[in-house]
Image 1 (cartoon, rainbow, N blue to C red):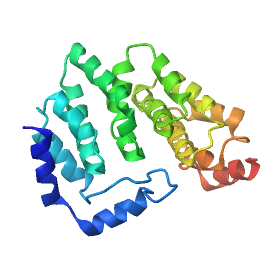
Image 2: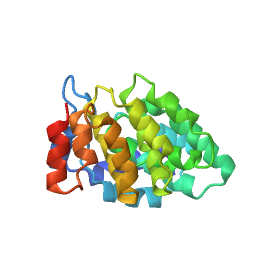
Image 3: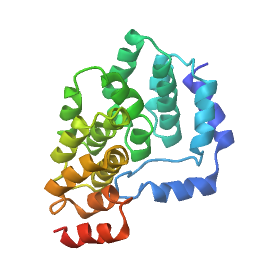
Image 4: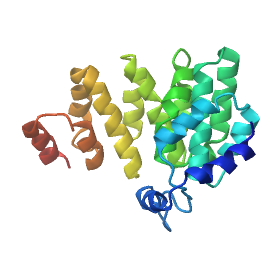
Length: 234
C-alpha cells in the first residue's frame, strides 16, 4: 500500500456539499486561519475507519500523505500515525514523535492538532521532560502553540496539572481566539478532575483572562457563578 493508492481511493468517498460546508467551518477564506485549505468532504468517522485499514502504511508513505494540500489526506495521515504510535515500541514512538514535530507545517488546523497532539506529543512526553512544550508555546506559529497546550490533555487525564497550568499562564496574553479556546478547554478539563485546582487558577487570573478563554473554562459552572466571573472579567 502506498500514499498514491490511498489518494486514488479518497475521491470515491468525497461529498462536494459537505466540502463546501467544511471550507466555511474551518475558515479557509482569504485572511482566515485556514486560508487556502482544500476539503473533499469526508467525515472523521470514515477517516478513522480508513486509518485502521491502512495502519501498516510505512512511515515514508504516511509522510507523503501528510504533505498534501488536501485536508482529509493530512488528517488521515495523522490518524494513521496515532494508531502506529499506540502500537509501537519506544524506539518507533520516538521516531513518530520527531516526525510529527518536524512536519508541523502540515498540521495546520485545529482538528488536525486536537485529534493527534495529545496522542503523540503528550503521550511521548508523559514520562519525560516537558521542556519541548514550552518551546512550542513560544512559537510565532499558531498551530505549534495549540499543539503545546493540547498535548497537556494527556497529562490532565492522569491528574497531572502542573504543566497545563504553567502553559495556560504563559498563553494568557496570546492574541488568537483559537488559543483562548484551547486554554479554556484544558482549564475546564482540569476542573472536571479537581475543581479546587481550576478555581485557584481562576482566582489569580480571571479578571485579566481573554473573555473567550474564561467562557470556555467556566462552561460547566452554575449560571450564577458564570455570571459573576464574567461580570468581573475586565
